[in-house]
Length: 388
Image (cartoon, rainbow, N blue to C red):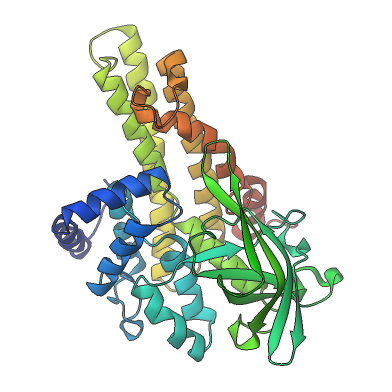
């Protein structure tokens, strides 16, 4: 168990008591919905988040001036972890990434317009960054925004836009400068998903999870919705990614629990046999790696609590998280054998199919939020001070 202060432990006790007292029907419906697809809060997930917002439990670390509890980023980290352990939505990108970036980089009218609605659980953002020819190399993106009076007119395409089908807004990266300007010619626009000219096409991954392609055809966005200066959006874009990566750590614990529960029920962890000892060692090593993942995330929370942004630290966390998840699912399916291929959703699937689905999802973990290769570059340059 990570060492926490008495105040942080008291906060966790208070949070758990609150969650235990929520409407059990809403909680169970939300949990089932969230297990099916944790990246896209839908009917019950939105009701659940609005309930937390109304009760003052969203924005734990947000300043009181923005409606938060004024606690540290460590309490916010504990909040996100506890909700994930219960398989309940914790606000994901909107609360944990977009809100903090708006506080730091948005102007006063933007803060007044969006922050109260985010902390109330009324808004859901999707990230509009990747394009068919600009994924890891975001500086190559081509979606263009051209000034027309007080608006921008936007044309282009985004891909891998998870959550776009249920989002209220798109956190949209566009090119306002020349293509040759690379990251110096980018801007960030807050875009309502119901704006005329936006269309969405589903993309179903090999794990059966939905992401999306988003097409923008002469979409008009007021210039007042630009976050930061024109052609100076690179810092806004990357700040949101760093906040996103900081909260990676919960899933490996959940997947290891599926593995150990299955092994225990199968009697594989019992006895004094060589096989049982070997499995105990393998599970023990994975458990240590899960705790390391938690400590990486906690380090990022501590950096945030000190008023800094964890650039290289968030990248370390993201790489470790994705590779660890893959190792856990691989180990589990190796142990289960051929019956491990029974798909998620089938009542006969060992470990409820979570390890099988996890392995099918694993390629996405290596590039979602920025490929691991890009993260290694960030670690080398931002963390170790190595030349490019």
